[in-house]
Amino acid sequence: MRTIDGIYEKIDYKDKSLILLHNNRTADNYPPHWHTAVEIIMPINNIYTIVIGKTTYLLQEGDIMVIPPGELHELIAPKEGLRRILLFDYSLISNLKGSTNIFSVLSQPRLITNRNAPKTHKALTKLYEEIAEEYFEDNTLREPALYSLLIKMFVILGRKYMKKGNIIPNVKISKQREYIEKFNIIFDYINENYMEEISLETIANVAGFSKYHFSRLFKQFTDMSFYDYLNQRRVKEAEKLLLNPTLSITEVAMGSGFSSISTFNRVFKSFKECTPTEFRNLYQCRNRVKSSIHMLNAK
Image 1 (cartoon, one colour):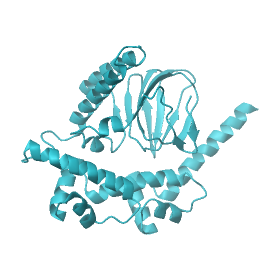
Image 2 (tube, helix red, strand yellow):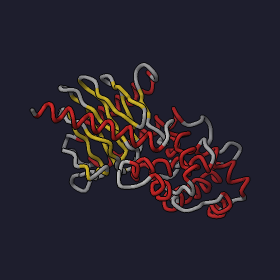
Image 3 (spheres, one colour):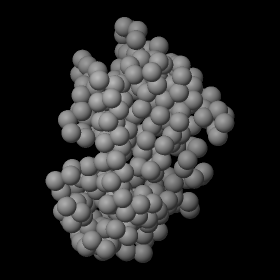
């Protein structure tokens, strides 16, 4: 059972754990929602549909979808089927030393299949099976065993999606560790202040770097510029606000950190391939269609 308050889902972890795994057989659909957990979905029997923005993913049996925290998504189930759904607190991996570049891995949804990445898919499938076996057994040290398996999953994902070699080429490992700690501070700062005006000079000062040095390092860490990263964070917030019909587009823009409607429209379209108004209408249309189907089935 999942409880969604508006568009926010609070994950009901059990027994003070930060991991929740369940084998889902219900034919219920879940309307657009988001949560702070990372979600990993694998259909076991039959297909499963996931809608993220304008993209619809039709998962086949055995496919693995990794949904980042804060990503607005919709789940559509067939009448019959079984899928494994794993949710866990992002802090389990984000707080690990040396894991800063996990941010770039989870900058977007990742669909791993036997068709597009056979080697990675095979390794992740094996780990997912081990996680399920460990989760449903009442073994001693169950929680740390699960943590270790999750870390292995994201090491595999990181090695697939991150650039090969050192995070910062031509820099000693000891210096890289120092940079990683600074970038953890930077990401926290962005997450707490994205609604405010953050200049390149400001964020470089937070890191203790020159503007040039910071820009170069940030690009190597995230594979995107600082302003692209900041705008991506703002767009994610805007997606959630757009589902509230009582907010105007101007209020959404201001509430997600954009200083003007024109900038908001341009940046949002560059990330989502539609304007904020089109995005809002898309979800409102989906909800009207679902309501009509529900009323017809109830007659």
